Length: 155
Length: 211
Picture 1 (tube, rainbow over the protein chains, first blue to last red):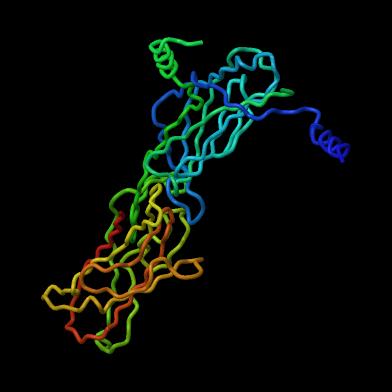
Picture 2 (cartoon, each protein chain N blue to C red):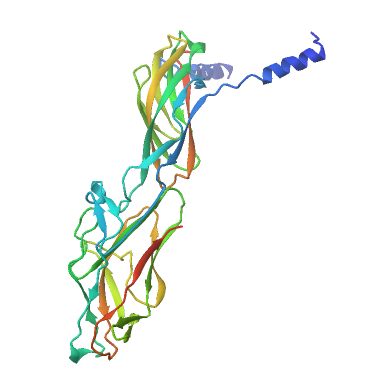
């Protein structure tokens, strides 16, 4: 019996793949800065259609600064996350200047922005961030909360 | 290790005063033009093409006339007479230029747009006088005029239903948020009154009100 338990434990400890990823940790991006005040979204179509989703969109610039000093010298993946806002559904997509990856994500989801060796104390980039919101749900004002999380390779 | 009480308090105060790291940047969003309402009855005016090609509505346009001439021998015989239009009011939809109405009909359409506000609707009403009046002051009850609605290519119920004018303001239809609605009205004179020869006029006004 004890031998069987030991075997089961050994099986459970086998990694699912050659590369193991740790649980995600939040990255301090308190130095990031949104350039501009409230982003005013414009209707994507000048009038409602005869059906379908009514969306509004707008673009704003974000200087992204990620404090990755705690993980310097390690291989990692960094994701941008977007919390689900209170009233509406949101799609965010962004371009970058190359240090981080461009991409897109929906609220409540995450998207990869970096994969590889952390070779600096801070990762910087400039995002041109476009927000597309569902006009049927958007209330007068909404705050979108973005964040970043990191997963280390072979922790 | 025993620290003096005052030192412990100071150390605790120093720790709690440290700013918590902000781990999320925030983007505040709002709608640039959260509300809009558009109503066209008859001709209407657009600038720069149709809506779907970037055009924008302009206030104004002709007040179109719906008319019928009843032969003297038929006046008051109770047989309804279809009414036509004076001139050629525009028959196309401002949404995309589609030929939505047929000659003799009056286009009516629009939308109520807003963000949020689930369940809210705009109300379309029509306000009519009690009578059509001739130059001599003779009258025909406004209830002698009714209408049906249709639209080329439409299936199912029309968003603006058929009806009959009545004095005062009467509801016509509800416009849900963010949906384009349109119909074409065909008017009929009931011809139930024996009236003197003459031209009888009345003006009705359509209004869309939103919350």
